[in-house]
Length: 217
Length: 121
Image (tube, rainbow over all chains, first blue to last red; front, side):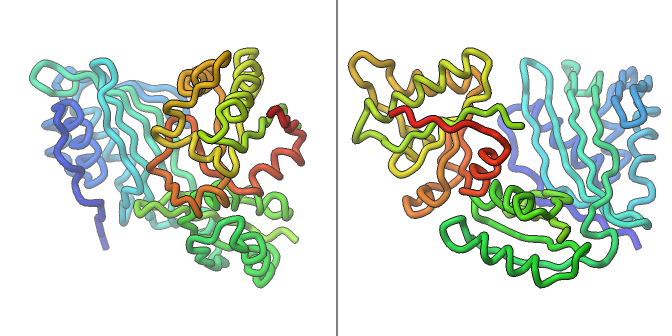
């Protein structure tokens, strides 16, 4: 079943170029081919630095085909974070996605610089891609969850984390959720100091941080 | 092995000289290419917030707002003690560029990895 989810559209920007950036993200993440094509100039230059190496496409059609091919097998695309800003006449766009594919969940992040023509169409795209990174906590089904709430280092965070990681078998993963700003920096350090392995760190749209820790001892 | 230099700062507006001196030393380190951090605790956590350095100027020392900006431009970082920021109601959206709220474990991990701490004022 195909399910698409995306956050509510960003508030209207005062600068048209940022609107183009936001529209680009929406078109890519909702796989809206017509909208994506309408944003691109016919003679588009598309340069990419992918995990497999640098490559390039010419023309809007090739770019649409390339981008849609990346997400063709996704059951669901969730936008975890996105930004769009003008930088000296170019448009800088970033987006981090959680992509559910038949083989499991993946994170992917792309950083894009756009050049626009006078009519607002995109004339060139320079794209840097993280590749599809498998989400550790979804690999084995051996993930456990602990919501640390707003506990900080003076409120017993270390003890609570130690008790929770100690309650799961060695080799399993504890996904710790925190909203405390200091704990966001502290939890990975705590985990490493206690001899465990930090498998992934992921920000959520509501401002929390999910830290996946594998119990090592 | 961590090469970080961590300069403690515990004072804010109530003691401009003590608030400024750690930044003087840390800025020297950052300007010299060292990985420098000012660790702000107690009242110093306000220094990493919007307006937190306004008006802090000890005669004979640079205005702290200018020094702070120069330090960040030189690659320095400012860490704000989370246990001190929370009871003062300081949230992430109040922080200025270069400042991060951290907890004790972050500092401990750096020190265990070899970071040197400097009590300068």
